Image 1 (cartoon, chains in turn brown, yellow):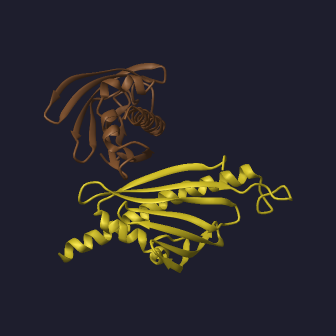
Image 2 (cartoon, chains in turn green, purple):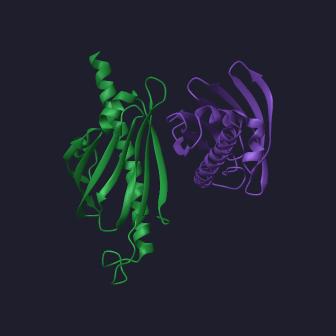
Image 3 (cartoon, each protein chain N blue to C red):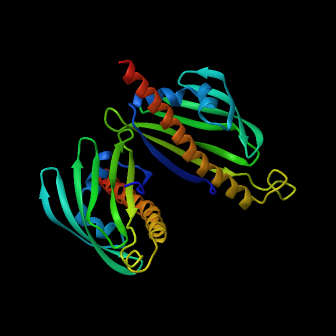
Length: 168
Length: 168
């Protein structure tokens, strides 16, 4: 685990924590929020957790992985961990946090802990890359996706909050 | 204000919110936390706010500015606004937020809203730069300083929390 990188990204939503939580925990709606996510299906649901299978367009290639999500509604945290990882990924986990910042705003935080795979018997990762190249690609994707996903969750939460306000 | 850029950076501290709040609100201790901050003196203190004068080493040059800080202990927010700005800065404001994430951890958030100065009568900012150059320099400094300042506040809060635990 010595090569694990930890990142934290954040954005403020003008929406109550309960609305952000609703958006975050509705994983089967993710394809409507994130353009690259082509499908999201919950395959197992238990006490405080769920397991989902995702199909995601990664640079024009459809990749699939399975993620376990542990939900802590009291803390406002969805802890995720990829069970089967994508080809470049040794491990990938982290948290979505929805922290109330006053009654009408929420600090949304997305953290990642990840490492790229080590070279295989052929001296390459996924038959193509050095470990350093795989790490760079993965770190770049985490950076871009963090910003994009936080913005998408914020926008959806703000839409729902505005709709609820109009309906009230 | 159309050129204003908004940024948010964050880090998790393994320390209770009250400890992070104590570190954030002790501005006269900032020179001990941030290497570039050479002095910090509170020049005025009122109901829920303080005004401080800072001397900061900016790329080898000592610059000074005055900042107003509005403290909201209930929300865990220090809203700051530069009253007299540094040579490149049109305006600079933002918030330090200390949001509890469970009893022993705190999400520390630092936001910036800033713009570089427009070119003066000589067609330059501070006699040297185009507006775009000034913006780039400012954005780069905000990026570097956000990461460094968040890490410094986190480290100090974690030191104090560990010390309090040992003393208990």
